Amino acid sequence: MELIQSFSVDHTKIIPGIFLSREDHVGNDMVTTYDIRLKKPNREPVIDVAAMHSLEHIIATFLRNDPDRKDEVVYWGPMGCLTGFYLILKGNRAPKEIYDLILAAFRSVEKAEEVPGATAVNCGHYLMHNLAMAKWYAAEFAAYLEANAGSAAIFEYPRTERLVTDEGQQFFDS
Image 1 (cartoon, one colour):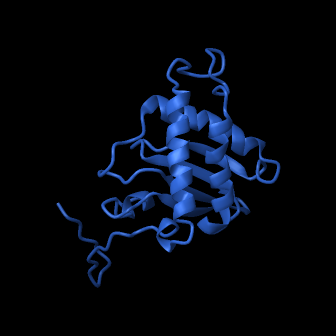
Image 2: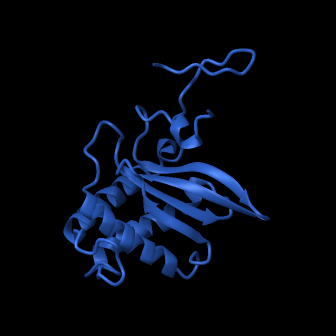
Image 3: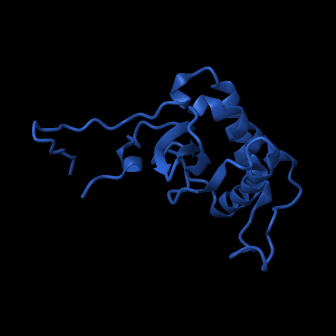
């Protein structure tokens, strides 16, 4: 079975940042999946579940209301490992090209006075939100992005290197 693309990233080397995860053709359109990584996998504590849920609601609302990009947003949601989010946009831009959008999205969390859609009618687990912690994580990530904006490392995935035979067989650590 072929290893999916997101598992080919060396998670022992990844740092927080904005990364191009994959590009796909859907009909005549190109869609791009971005890895918006807030935490170093396996080295930092993951994002609190309730804060992650609140970040999902607030930033999804921000992105889908951004006048310049709302028609391009396909998906915003958390990674199962709770170290970041996936953003899927129509088109194909380099991670640096969405830096301002991502920074603005995380900065918007600071201004939130409530979590949009946090009601029993609108949300599958409306009691599991933590706006104060969401603000803390968002401010931490926004400050990190600003401090490292000139570093290529926050825009380029580290890839795992695998030994490949002449026949194309890959070897993996056990």
